[in-house]
Image (cartoon, rainbow, N blue to C red; front, side, top):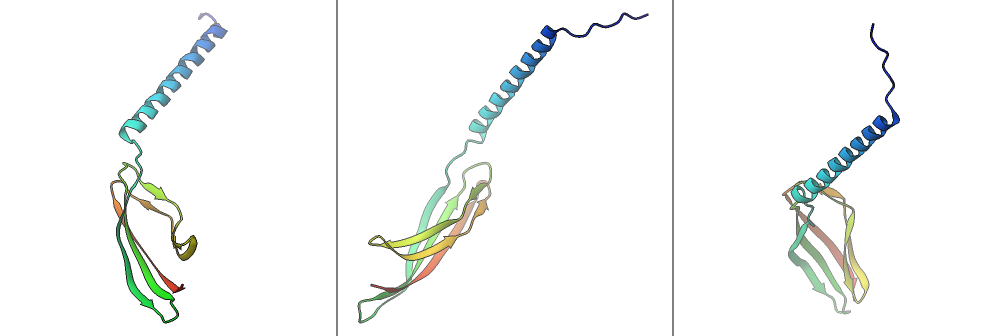
Length: 126
């Protein structure tokens, strides 16, 4: 006949919990080290390639009408996709907004460059 087994003591359970906790903390530390060394997040590189005024006219009453165009390149240097949220482009003159354009949210894949263009017309600008 076999001997009846004794239930584990409280010390054995405590030791198991401590070993499991130390192991989990170790795994979390390793994940953070890998994330910040291999996948080190960088800010996107944004460059304005061109700013143009394709149409420009001045009337006799000293008002100006023109079209404003801006061409931008956004480069993602990270090893993971970059998400940009809804944004705007504003053209200000003496603190007053004379032009405005909405830029929708999107993703830029790792190591890729996305080119964006914004064009809006400014009517009757004093």
